Amino acid sequence: MTAIGFTLQPHLPTLELLAGLIEEEPDYYEVTPETLWRPGRDGAFEANGFHQRFLALRAHTGKPFVAHGVGFSVGSARPDSARRERWLGRMREDARAFEFGWYTEHHGVTVLDGRELILPLPVAMNDASVATVRASLACMQTCVPDVGLENSVFYFHLGEPLDEPAFFARVLDAPRTHLLLDLHNVYTTALNAGFEPWEYVQRLPLARVIEIHVSGGRDSDPRWLASGATRRLDSHDDSVPETVWHLLERVLPLCANVRGVTLERMEGTVEPDDVALVREELRRARRIAEKR
Amino acid sequence: MSDSQAIELERLLADVLTDADPAQAVERALTDPNIAEETRAALESIDLDGLRVSALLVAKLRFERLLQGSARAGERFETDPRGFSAEFKRYHLEVPPRSSTPSEEARSFDFWRKAEQAN
Image 1 (spheres, rainbow over the protein chains, first blue to last red):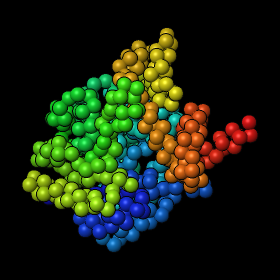
Image 2: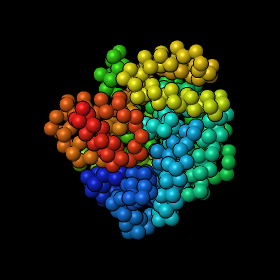
Image 3: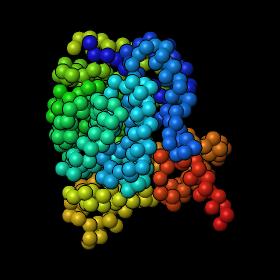
Image 4: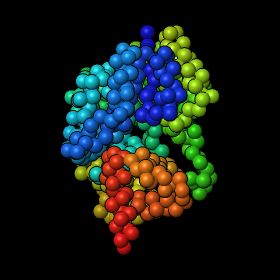
């Protein structure tokens, strides 16, 4: 049966508000490793208080963890080797401590020309990028044997977004490399680019899907653009839209090797009145998984 | 696209996304006769509204990283949101983002602020 997971955010008020459902509902937890680090005196990363808290949760519940990073920058054309080694050194320690089932990263580039832009940004979908991303995944495999790439939301593209599934198929042909299929990201990209989400999904190498993300989001503030136009955002700050639930129902039976469906919700986006809703979303994901 | 062209495209995107007017920065980049044809084609294909949203999010994420790393910055934002936001905007345009953690960003901001006040 496909396991159901929940993202743990390093934010005390959110963790305390959701403490009951965090213990009771998910089968596994997902963390963003770099949010559990702080710089140490010698420049290496060391564990912060949330690292300890989540290790204690693991010991208490016995439930497994998976890692999902944002900042490794898999698409950087010329990655800084000192930065990479600092990152991977910490990841190896965390992989030993948490025994991550798998380690995924956002597709794209967050460090460009040595500048840390934080937001995943698009890469051109060509042979050079295929080689770059494959090499990054191989680096990640020195920490955790099963690694993967998540389809990110890009607000501009270098090429056609509907060519991205074929790019993933080329990148993910090495053993134990997988796809983290984020269905809200598909929905967001489709809305912004003007195509049907299933047009994208059906082109994906679905046999490589190890995990599926579901979440919600919002539109950008109309004041952001002089035209008043908005874009759907990958903000993880709202309930899962019905379209995303329908996508999950449709795609899950086609993902022969999927191991988990994870509900994502960003810190600071849940009020007391939302707790029951979040719990119901986890249960809805479970009901869909049980029908698979 | 060769590795050197990929590196050139990354540099141009980083310049554009940290510019005060990203769309104008793309126009300026396209006036350079020496950029590779594939790089030129990639820049010409960019949806400018999507680029503007991306640049705003880059700034927003850096702002959030600073507030995470500096309680003092958070207090100043609470007290004077407009003034602090204007200050952050200057910082973001003047100082390339090279910090990979909130505390590094906080140190970078403090260093810039002291230099600005000394001038």
